[in-house]
Amino acid sequence: MKLRFAPSPTGWLHVGNARIAIVNALLAIQRQGQLILRLDDTDVERSRPEYAAGIEEDLRWLGISWQGFQRQQDRTERYALAAEKLKKAGLLYPCFESEEELKFKRELRLRQNKPPLYDHAALKMTPEQYERALANGKTPHWRFKLGNKPRRWDDGVLGERQVKLTAISDPVLVRADGSYLYTFCSVVDDLEMGITHIVRGEDHVTNTGVQLDIYEALGGRPDRLAFAHLPLLTDADGGPLSKRIGSLSLRQMRKDGVEPQALVGYLAALGTAQDPVPGLPADLAARFDIHAVSKSSARFDPRQMLGLNKKLLHALSFEDAKPRLPEGATPEFWNAIRGNLDMLAEARLWWEVATGRIAPPVLDGEGEFLKAALATLPAGPFDATSWSVWTEALRAATGRKGKSLFLPLRLALTGEEHGPDLKDMLPLIGRDRAEERLRHAGATS
Image 1 (tube, one colour):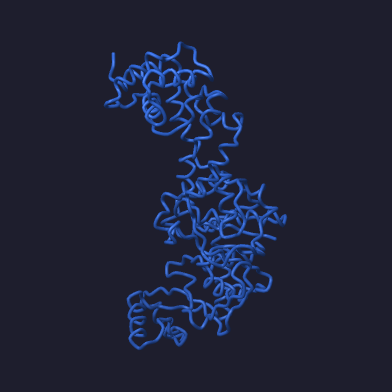
Image 2 (cartoon, one colour):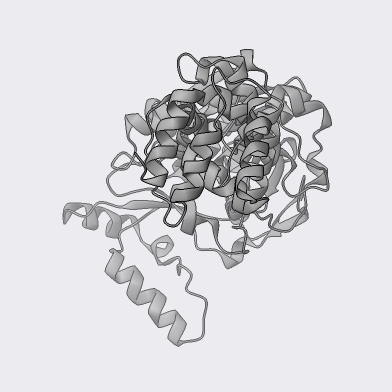
């Protein structure tokens, strides 16, 4: 088995890309195959080196490794040779229509209630007409002559599929400026690199029919290629994921503190009946079954993914978390806060609460209660019993209980309405900071 993940370095990877990369990696590990990372960077204007570097960085973060690397910009000579082969076979033919002329033809066919397909007019051009066009300074683009038979395959996810080539315009493979399009380059690469399995999004189904025709024209055996097209992801409401793609880039998720094991585990199980478990591809490959992936679109729900992230953090040991915690963090601090974290980046807020000089809000109407809280505050240093001793004394002094007792204390000590158990936080905050915050919140002196 030889697979490839072929992103375009024209932007940051997002969860849709990540799912494709993860499934490719899972299969390569499961079947002891090879995974090739190939940058489809034929779009020179939009491809940028920072995006290319970001792709590699994101894949490593996901625990994905690859056994070969290619850039399409380095392979233009191979595409030129393949194009010449198709020209000699009469399957790649020159066309001189401008974009305006093609637009007019499409509109005309639509008015005639015909599909807006290319009319093959260039195939009727004589050698003399071709030479005359060149002499007049025109430069052709080149189209591939599609066959008349449907292309069929047994898809690893979608089942039996076919594409009727007669319902598709002959695709342009070479632009007038001599540059090559993805449709062509991808086939040449897959053929020459010995790719055996292609796993990509469902939006490529029509491409697959076209590319199988090109693949065979270049001497390949379509029956030796296996395909699996994953249905596209939607957002939690069933809408197009692309509308929210910025917030779902891997770069942003990493910055926000999402754990790679949570994202990989969630995406590996998405669209299947399996419950997600956190892990990297090497951990999850044995349980993965591509045939269990649903033919229907799967919903990417950030809340479910964060639930898995939270579960992972709750079980994370201090030793594993320490390199990413604020300097000076202790096991006591980690044990106090980890049950309250959605993402590890939130640890910095609680470190400030535990050790910094935060300014809690002034609590209107709570001045007398906070004076009583100061009066009953135990002498330091605090320990695991200090919180219960203090709140019991304060309950006796004020008659308060439940939320009216605990919420003002939490707001005064942490500035937050919710958070870690104050029994564990109070010893970390210490008496001096606790006294200072109670005075500030009660506006007392």
